Image 1 (cartoon, one colour):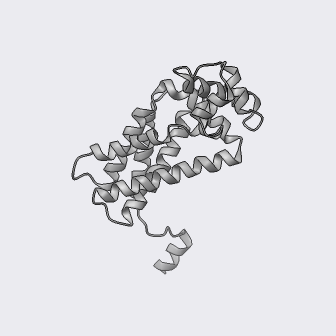
Image 2 (image 1 turned 180 degrees about the vertical axis):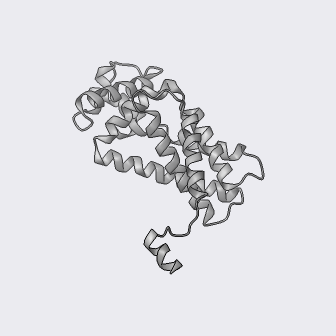
Image 3 (image 1 turned 90 degrees about the horizontal axis):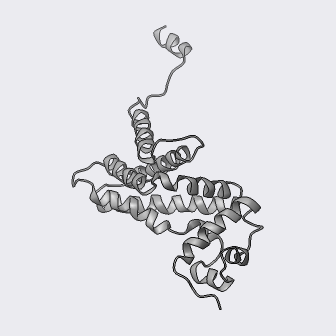
Length: 204
């Protein structure tokens, strides 16, 4: 009888990711994952409700990183400063040693529409939780929702850059760069740009 060994969860996660990447998510079974590390299918289901959960395990920890960043921000921080604090905290969570794992996970998800939908839902949950945290810090609507959804989008953009082949910058550095780009966007005039012909007519 195979015992439920310490560290089995991590071994199952690594084995599953390797199998998903080499033979495809749909083609890989829970039994195969367990057998590849000398465990039983029953052991697999002690740790994960299904094989999708291997890819989305730890979402609560990921979410907590954002919320802890907001909670630790100064009392009078603006909405954008709170989002910046959340991005910094998330950047610290994704250390460079995690990059190969994150890169492989992303490649598996990108090949499966159902997994892509689940990943999008993760970002929806993130934006909703951050918006609630901003409201708790006194940020009014609609600013709280705008800031939270913008923050989730900025994180997604930064993360996609972080896992690109050849990228060496930390996620925190990339996140700050994306935030600066967002700031430059919001600093622009909101008046509609006019063509040279419109300008000529107005002068005439």
